[in-house]
Length: 89
Image 1 (tube, rainbow, N blue to C red):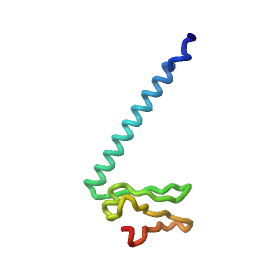
Image 2 (cartoon, rainbow, N blue to C red; image 1 turned 180 degrees about the vertical axis):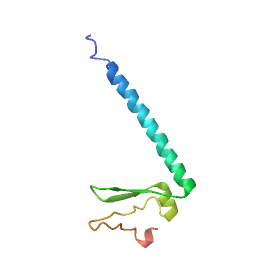
Image 3 (cartoon, rainbow, N blue to C red; image 1 turned 90 degrees about the vertical axis):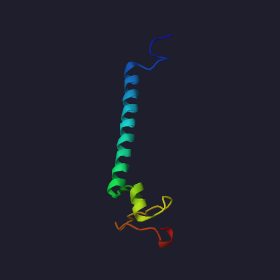
């Protein structure tokens, strides 16, 4: 068989290792962030600017006593964060 057709090249193998390493590093940093937020009792949230959907960190859910099944809402067209209905807390 021709060389390189059945086996990944050294470059592809190197890139796969690098991607795996970076994913592991990202996972560690995310865990460190979760632990730091829990110790400091500080949460965070993000907004997807294409949909205005808001997501909360686990610590923000804990602080607000909101179920993790409850979406924190969105900023909507007006830019104001909508909160879950009172019965969803």
